Length: 148
Image (cartoon, rainbow, N blue to C red; front, side, top):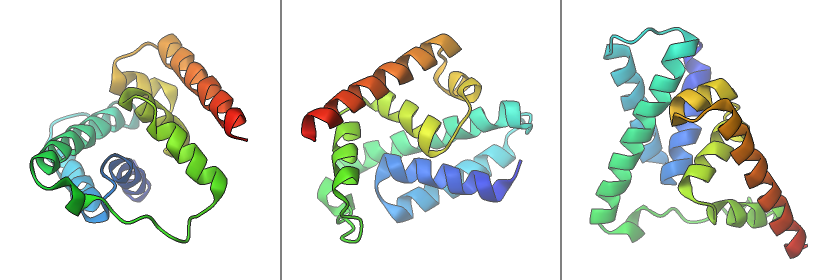
């Protein structure tokens, strides 16, 4: 595995989940360390889903911890340089999706994770993943048409 590429993708995944740069970096590093310490086969086919599972669980743990603390301290200020109207509308549309659907879209189109790997991460069949992604994209497309 190319650890630099995997680190970048895993970091984006964690940042997407937490919306906090330092927490995403910490969790990415922790996930990779736990992965390297584990006895799991490190081939791309088996290792990548396991690595994403570790990162996902660490993000969930961190999010639970944040919820018990003051949530407002951990919400980053919006980036003023990324004010494109379409991007904002798409982010709003995606943020309105259930968490499972957000994960599917993020994994497939942002991190370009293969469908077979998504199946292993989520425990769904290929058909279910394709069907859900197609339905999600159709709803997002319809929602974006309504706005424009």
